[in-house]
Amino acid sequence: MSMLKVTDLKVNYGGIEALKGISFDVEQGQIVTLIGANGAGKSTTLRAISGLVKTASGAINFMGRDIIPFNAQQVVAEGIALVPEGRRVFDNLTVLENLKIGAYLRPDKDEVAAAIEDIFQRFPRLKEREWQLAGTLSGGEQQMLAVGRAMMARPKLLMMDEPSLGLAPLVVRDIFSIIRDLKSEGITILLIEQNANAALRCADKAYVLETGRITISGTGEELLADQRVRDAYLGSAAR
Amino acid sequence: MWNTVFPYLLSGISVGGQYALIAIGYTMVYGILRLINFAHGDVFMVAGIIMVYMAASGVPLWLCIPLVLALTALIGFTIERVAYKPLRNAPRMSAMISAIGVSYALQNLVLYITGGLNQLYPTIPWISQSVTVFGATTKIVTVVTPFLTLLLVIALVQLINHTKIGMAMRAVSRDFETSQLMGIRINRVISITFVIGTFLAGVASILYFTNYTTVIQTSGAMPGLKAFVAAVFGGIGSIPGAVVGAFIIGIAENIIKGLDIMLFKLGLIHGPLGLATFSDAFSFALLIIILAVKPTGLFGEKNTDKV
Image 1 (cartoon, each protein chain N blue to C red):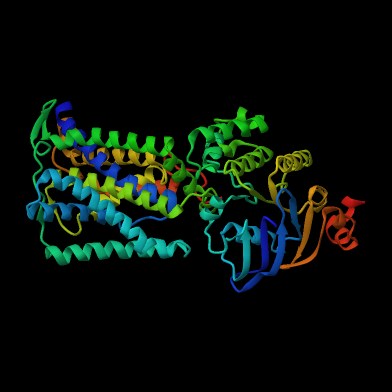
Image 2 (tube, rainbow over the protein chains, first blue to last red):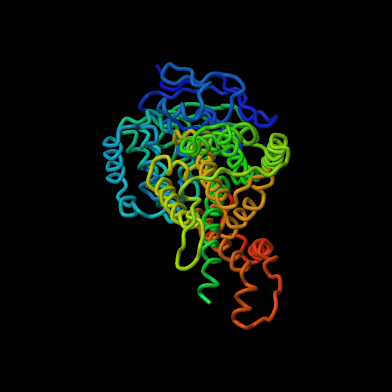
């Protein structure tokens, strides 16, 4: 059974149908990616799952529970964390506080402290900057912090919205290797990317979203080989 | 010369402390909601009225003080839930107009209850007694105010910088949506902000009205405005800024009240100039200058818009 099952999801934004009934599944332990152009509805999909936007109709089922009526705080408590687009670290909080706030709903202080140590081991550069305000970090470091902060909630499903956006090519490579590491540790990932090439290479399952509809789906490899995908999203990157 | 200046300085520091306690409410609410809570000065006045009526109905004073503080905080909580929360996603101007509405509603409610007559504030023992400090005779409350203010400010800064709820307040003040993604209940954080702000206004009302002894429906307007100016002067959104701004304004306007006598004693003038009239005008002139020259105030964030 799939971990997350989205069925015929519709979302309206001020009279505009942002999602016109999309359905997809995320299996436990997989990386699933949604690719598509700007305005296709990728972010809206994640925001709807997170409880940040109201859905018009359809179903979102997470580990057997209908999470449509849940607000953002309840969705986090269910075990879904979102790394938002543009990183959105709290620039007025220190690096350490940003991690602590990621574990806001976890009551056990010792566990949280241990989790922070884990994050620092994974990202030693954050450890070096522990007491700095997050606003002083570079874009790549902020992205690491945003991922670390989401991990602090101990999510079963980690959703990432354009994690490579606006980062230097070398840093983008780092981010994708982090994503692969997380997967190898058994974390399920729902990834949204404009960098379709890199996203498809690490994805187990992929969906193409076009103006609110899913038009193509398959494994990452299948989509990499698909002529329509190559023409529309991969361009010269796929040679 | 010192003997002439000191009493004015002393009362300036004291009034500054009272303004500071009110100003914190303005600055905290602005910091989290980007809303100028125009009703804040009136909540301060209502706290005074509650004390008057509670004491008159025979509740012992030692019980009145905590009850007044609790009720004032409850009023702050209720105002936010009723008048501001439904407008959370409306344009900022709507919430501001709502705040002005609450301000008039509170004033008129008190006008209706009191009939527009000055109400005598109960005499709270000990702090109402006279005391002589360095040759200046004043009420004990004048001396106690700055210390109590600093104590409360330190406690508040500790709360904001070193507790979980304080961290949540800082996060919410920066980014509502991402705070929700962390599992923070933003409505709860906003309510707590109002409760703290109005609680401090309640403390200020006890100190202020013990000194000025009467309360009327417009009593909150002037201290409220001065505290607002202090918050803008210090950099709205900044708690240390509001406190520093409040002390500067409190001291400056009291020094101006005594300026005639000081200049006369220095032999610079030979008759009264009536400069005391300008003590209120000073605050507002300062507001205009600050807004024109440095709109972010002394300690204000450079970028007040949300990222």
